[in-house]
Amino acid sequence: KNNIMRSSCAHHHHSCSSTVASSTSSSSSPSSDDGSGDNNNNNETDMNMEVLKLRMEQLRLRETETTPLRVLVLDASLPKQRLGLNFGTQGDAKRSLNCGTSMGEGDIPLGTKFAMLGMSPTNKKVLPCGVEVEVTQFEVNEDGSTFVELTGTKRFKIDEQGPYLDEEEIPHVRVRFIDDDKACGSLDDYIPRPGTDSFAMMESLRELVDNEEALHELSTDLDDLLEKWERLVVEGKREQQPNHLELIKSHLGEFPDVKSFAKRAVWVCSYINPIPSLGVAYEIRPALLMAPTVGDMLRIAKAGLELSITKMSN
Image 1 (cartoon, helix red, strand yellow):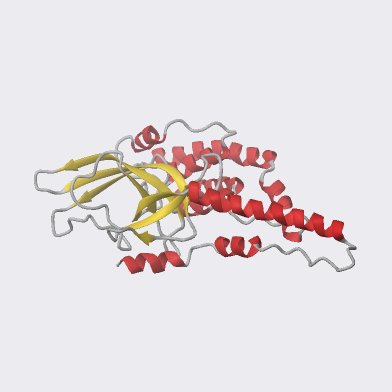
Image 2: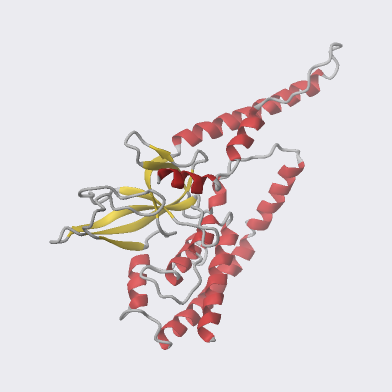
């Protein structure tokens, strides 16, 4: 079973590590015998030393900035979402989930943290981006069955090496946490050399991506759409339980300020793809977790609202 976890994850690793490794080799041209061109070579060597230092720093950060966590494969969840799991008494003491992952036997202390990964809705492969969850409720019923509540805390991206088994043969991953104001692309390792085409392209893409005005416009668009969406849910009696939307909001807290672009996108996706499910929107949480830029996160949130509004209006 654990091999399933490995193979399903294997397809998703980015080839960053190989890019980093191959880029570390110094590529200064050999100096000519007559001593001419030494300045050029010195400049180039300096530049390569800089690149090398950058690479070494990246490798050091990868070591210091990754956190090992026991991995659970179940749902693409988001920060602040609460997932309640019921485990019966029959023959599954390990509390098994998907892909050979499990929560483990016996009592699980409150505050225990796991790495929660979902699967791609299209090809069912395990996603490399997920959310750290912590145990916020643990109850043993009289018949021996258990209830566990997991609450999402921080988004993360798993390290390139992928899942591994610890000494007890339990699947783990090393994760790098994503800043609440950023997208998962902010962790991409590959930094092209200044002066190359790919560097120029990355710079222009970044300007395109981080254009404050465009982000502000996308973020503002969410207000009217949210209002319309809520009206359709309530007036169409689509809540699955009394005060369903209020319950979800009590988990998620206040809708973030218009300038908190990434936080707003996460809030919207958590609200329209909630736990417990409403069944009125397409599943957009995997797309949000995988979005490389904050602009993409906002576009996914906006498209999710628009599609859901269309779905409910028909």
